[in-house]
Image 1 (cartoon, chains in turn yellow, cyan):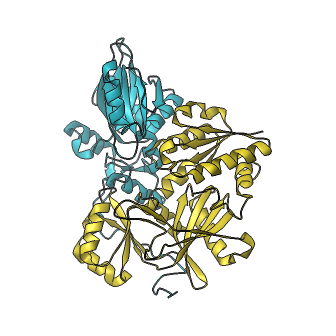
Image 2 (cartoon, rainbow over the protein chains, first blue to last red; image 1 turned 90 degrees about the vertical axis):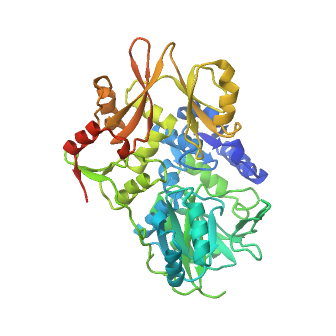
Image 3 (tube, each protein chain N blue to C red; image 1 turned 120 degrees about the vertical axis):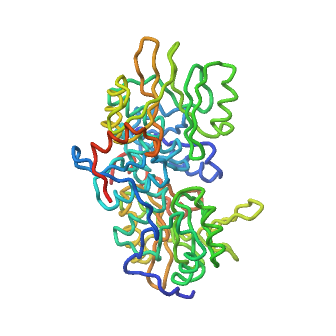
Length: 294
Length: 221
């Protein structure tokens, strides 16, 4: 029997579906003869008493989820997300570097420093990468601090805003699509595949209105046996470039081929959404945490 | 759906930053490694990316990005020091509650601050401020009775003040940070407890500290 801890942060649980997934994980763990407890930050001192830790909180190397992951790693627990994956995926500069080193196909990408944020450089980038160009702050999540720019003036305005968060930012060629593929990979194997549909008149899966309202794209699930082999191949290659944990690989489809937009640690798993049509997701997660595979 | 042109499917086309500022990097022959001497290695800062640039080029460099996080994220610093047998005070992670006297450090991406809290009357106000209205965690180190909080500069395992040299050596050996402002708790019996590492930009080194570094390293241009 394995003792599995799930590290949660109350402030990052924004939807009941996220908690629903944790509850289902607990039910499956019990059925398989394991024990699963929810741990909050005040319970961190208990981490050494567990065999595995599953992080289900917003990850960032500067917040307590990273502390929990690192403490668990030092104690020899199996950790999802492991600290190195958090360190790489939470910094898009680092993440794209890993993808580049592994030869993963992706849109043309450029890293910019403060001195590059000028109208002159913006003009040059827009000419070579095409309009619009996507700018990303390296430490953005849930599509925040990701913006399209069409003019050198916008390039400077958005670039300077993003540089308040980090000393480098990402510029990437824009790839238009009606959906993003999301392939979840665990231990080098595909866990589930779905599409996040981009809401009408938007260009990102998750959009925020000026009033602060969140507009989510719908989720469309796919049978693993019926998804294109090339999609799986590229996604697994991208995940392997980061590590051997749990990742949500986002890809754009270009005809019969695929480019990786980003690799996320701590991918969303919501009851009734990502797991729809993939009821085995929880059992595979529990067995992985219990070191029964991977 | 229209197929965008000019997107590479075969090989990614990442290019490095268009402009690359002069980095403070030196070779340390004793350890046969490169040193990032920016001194401020804060997450996603220029100094942090200097280490990442060199790591991605497979260079043996200190500090690595992982070393930076172990040094600058307070509970990780304390845990690593404890496991290395270095003297620290008892500590705990809290949502807001603590019992003074303590040193409280933030654990969140939005601010890096600390507060020495001696009186219980300040507990609620400090907790609310450093947790951002009880949203984020804080790290609390217990302050022994009549202890004082001091700082010193650790420069490649050396300190200009002899009584701190042993700890300066430990900081370099355990944490791999060539430059750090070290916070220590000086107990009433004279014992020194490690309490935290903070950025020490190269420009803030004294002339004596810079001279020490010149003898130890070879600047890389």
